[in-house]
Image (cartoon, rainbow, N blue to C red; front, side):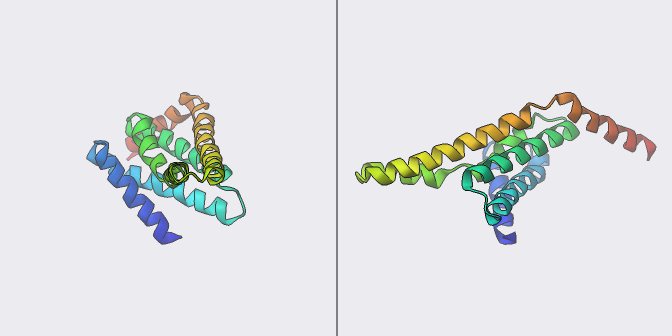
Length: 151
């Protein structure tokens, strides 16, 4: 599990490089992706289905992205889009296409429905995380500023 989380972090950083994220944010992007994948692994390891695990991981990623964006004064999409990379059901999309081309329609439909459920769950997790007022996250910036002034 630790190896998977570390690989997820590295993959997220590589994706951040590809998307021209500022270099100062690479580490936080990687942390966000690693935490998201860790939540996914935790949920699936405790009997949660792939779709529900993806929703919880996406919700966690969204909340962390909003926290990082408030603390670093960056758009939350910098952390959110790169962090979501680890959850995207790329293999499901590939196998859906493969089964379609191979004319194995029953497997195509089954894999397509599963992939669609995972993608929908990711969207729902993001929506739930984005529903919270930004003012809650801006309070973190004020707390950070006050702690820096005390030093």
